[in-house]
Length: 137
Image 1 (cartoon, one colour):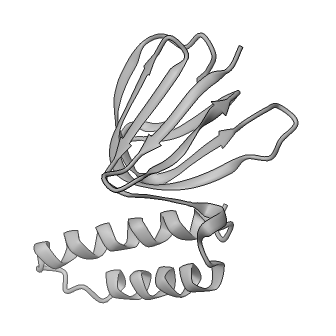
Image 2 (tube, one colour):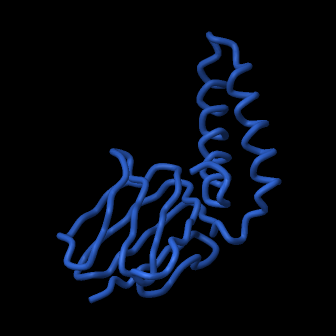
């Protein structure tokens, strides 16, 4: 039996296909979903979702920018603020953005809470895109 997996962002559907396995970046850690999974609703963190269409096929990576996932009757619906398939991301551009975001995060003054939050979010987005592109594993 397979899962029906849909990843939907405000402007388009990123993924709509059957899959054997899904790994989601939930706010409490990585969450694996297989066929027959119990009903579930979970918040998603900024990170990389991995999906495998069939057991002998490679994992596909999708950078998610936060949202929610619902699992019910072998259907996984993922509603996100933004998403990008790893095979559509330029690895060198993602590497440069990651390095820039890391530098920015390390240079935030200790007492500037607002700048710290913004730099952390930018770093998480850049890291997710870089990982999805195949940079950081």
